[in-house]
Length: 258
Image 1 (cartoon, rainbow, N blue to C red):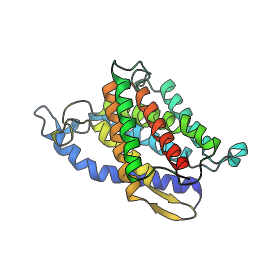
Image 2: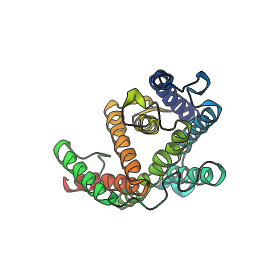
Image 3: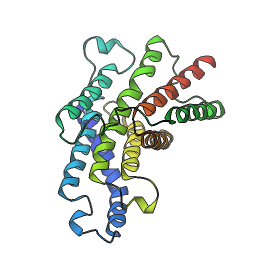
């Protein structure tokens, strides 16, 4: 199985799992609304179209970040090629999709009081890592790894998951009929689940199915945290900074422990 086919199967599997888990809950919670007509339970035609764009965008990101690396990118330890391609996809969607603007994806000044939340969150992340061990790759970090962790994962993952994907799902499934009546949005639930599955479940052309339940759980929880911060700040920038700081703190703790 080649890399592209394996990536497509991986992405479709993630979307199918989320649909199976969340579809019935979404149907039930939105049907309970007194103003819910059968044809609008899943957001109507407009909502269905937006969800289709979100699903297609997720599949594209899964494929782009798993393509064989070419030229100078093949010599690098980190997947700069895939990360830059994912950023390019975000830029393309922003430029071409009529319902996506910089404001929609959170590229705006955060609300006052947002940055202290980042400080508290990174302090908590460091405390957790000191208690249970550093999170991330156990290989000895080098200069490229530090540079990549300081820039890329938070930038492209937050811009895609808590930016583009979050905005599309929020527009498709606006406020009302929240999951099981909880004070959370469907954008938070769906993007966090896909974030967790994207980190812990994949089909590798060489190794077959790679499943890391612990990574699925921790990444999903991190996704919820990043979504909460994105919603509180009304901006994606604090989540980008927090994401990269968490990655860097793990590398620093790993390096200090050697």
